[in-house]
Amino acid sequence: MIGRGIFQNPYAFEPIPQPHSTRDMLELLRYQVDLYDQFIGLGLQGHFAPLQRFFKIYVRGMRHAAELRNELMQTKTTDDVRAIIDRLEAKLPAD
Picture: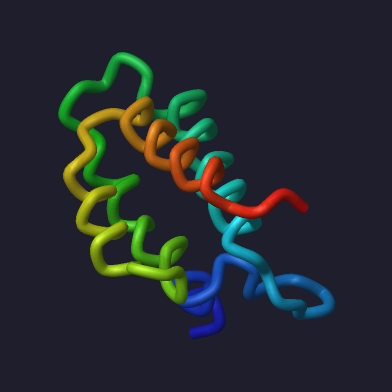
């Protein structure tokens, strides 16, 4: 199924495929977390697991991906996820 390609590469449906940096992936994860809060997560305690299933997609190919994925899976809130994203972005070289 073509739709499942998104679970390997969140940019699978780009008109012209191109490489994406770690920063791109973190920005896209932040965007998904923001959308989660906007449409699903606010006020819904205990409904965080559906978001967590996507973490592996974003960290695939990053340095120390397994440790990062485990850290993200331990989060309980979108604010926890944002804190990890902030920490990782601070370590990236400036564009």
